[in-house]
Image (cartoon, rainbow, N blue to C red; front, top):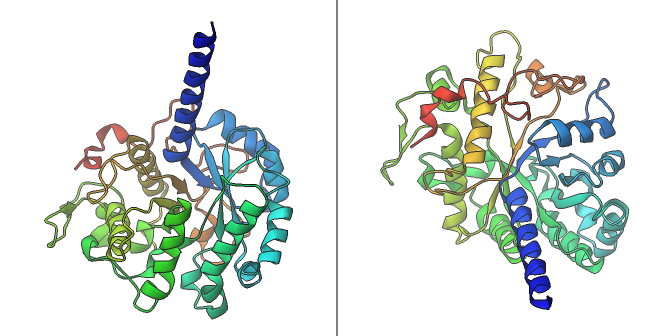
Length: 361
């Protein structure tokens, strides 16, 4: 009887561990922005995501306490963001401990906060105090978490592809000189030490040109040849990820994991921007979801599943800038889908995915 009980206990632990690994490693997430005056309350959002979608992770751009409370006991993991302007002060341990005490400790573990991202695309800001304090703040926040007894929350920071001085061909990917050794090497060392991922935001939309339309959209195309590896890339998304990986590997950190913090495609743009359409948004996001779930990886990282956060959950009508900025959403405020991206539980599979042979190498 004792042996059976112990066996059952160990099996339960094994199943629990495997489920945890599955949900955290193979996640389909979404960025949940709140720059709108017509958005539903967080409690409704949490219930919708939990019951109607395959989304198992969200990323927010602050530490909104209403959202953190709403996602308590849902099983959905939450990534929170440190504001850019807070970075210099959070390099100080007392400030970091206060921030953790105010924004993480009251909600964890009932709300599954699994990651803190420090700032948003800081390396693209040219703000010297933010950049110089970025890695120190990451280390200090991690230390503050440990002092608070919180050991299962990762700390990282998201990057645009502007961090690369060379991105084509992918195998030649390289971080910008000056930042490679001064910023990225110590950052990657910290990520390796803490088993946290390098977060990158690859947007083929921003690399779109009429000539490269199919390559950007996962559609049939001739591909782009990498003369150094002999690989022909069939889509821009894989090329962006492999260029990032190549830059990491050149510094000796090819073993550090990669998470896609943002990617997506807008459905409406200003006149004269042919890249934007509901069809293109559905095609890109639908195929991205399918690829992420299949775990095919990339040519340089085969069979690797990338935790991926689509941008974004809702259209946000208060965002400044061009029309496209307000039309990245998957859903309207009433939760009706703007197009089928294959993330609803009711059997929608994405835009014409049955004929998407170009997903395979």
